[in-house]
Image (cartoon, rainbow, N blue to C red):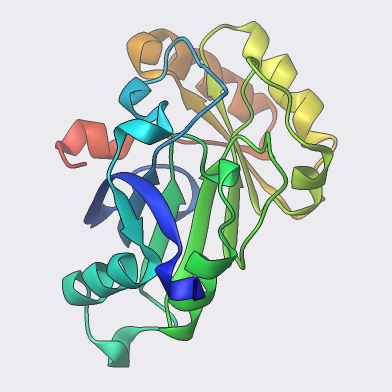
Length: 211
């Protein structure tokens, strides 16, 4: 089977704006892969957990639909971002997908809890660790961005423990868990003011009502 025939379980895919972290507000095509073995109790996409519940798409099909839904080639290489997320995307071998996207001039971004070794060629790696399963050691050397969801006040100290293991240039974000947004946001704001190496990340897509 050729790399472009490699199949992935795709829960959903859509063109929108990145709502969180470093690239907030930028246009991006999201590919949400099925399959997750982390099991966050507050996950807002639990339907993504069973990989077998989602239709399979080939690399060729995925790239084709992205090309047909985003600006033409003259705009690529700098501005056209594809975000691979989940579920937990690192459960899959992502080399064929990112090779094909890179060949077409797309920037490749991934959002991962880092629990599996990272595959693929990435322009940006957002590492969002979860307490429910420990990350693989290798992710700390790959992360461009550390984004920690704050559900409980103790999550901030836990976030610091991960920040200490990341590279010095890794950008650091604390993000309120949506169901406790007001309480967690106030806590994060106070902490960032005292510790300005951190930044506040908000789920802006939920405020403006886009995917």
